[in-house]
Length: 326
View 1 (cartoon, rainbow, N blue to C red):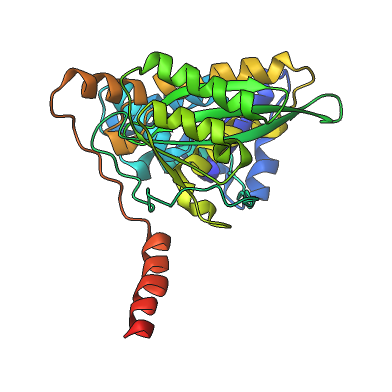
View 2 (tube, rainbow, N blue to C red):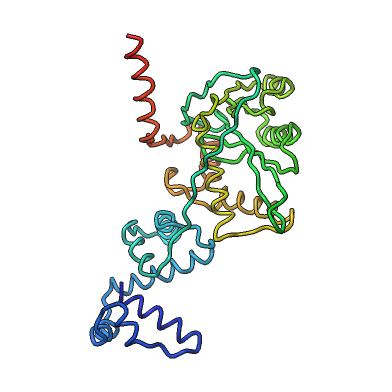
């Protein structure tokens, strides 16, 4: 790795019109200059050449996707696009040598607090698996800041299908209000007129309004709501927001005008739907999974691996409750 670092740094210095100081770099990295040159000029075997080809692909994808790909997504991308079967470990090592890594998503610690009693039961009950499209939808509203000092807010409402993680409808607006949610609903139903899913949300005022509840009933949808202070009840939606914001705001990205975040949202959702491979789906995009499911009488099943934190939560709360009752 030290030799690769010296080699890459030297290449950058030459590209910038400077003369690389090999001796200084060797001293800093505590390697012998003679050993470095021996390594540099050794005859490359087939694996060395293949690693160089992989490194070029990694650089290409890192640049194309603005540094969003971690080693797992990088491996999936290379393996599928080039019909290869490289291991995660191999891709990780090469990325580490190149000094390439993805951004780290910060934890989201916000939660909507319910303000009235016009609510539905938690019918979803954290069962985030779905056997077919339009069986279960989840939704939420989030905000994006823009302006010279991030003084303005743009709100995004989206509906997510739990079967294929498809964004079945979304809408942006200046205000977090009923109109924003109703427009999102209209967009989703327009593209899925025969959909009658279980509809899950938090306890926000938009979803507890009599008008919205009546709209769900007319469409034949069963309403479900997260419990108070239980954001994990809507885990897939929270996770979706986390991924989206992490990738849209990577490397300190800033939006000055309202049009910029709107365009960025549209571009990212298109990328997510049609280009972003998901390992759970066999390295396919949500659009591919949905298209296959709608074309088959019996859709493929993609069960979610059990989350260790959720399993621990169930053991602590449900098992403990049963014991206390007994």
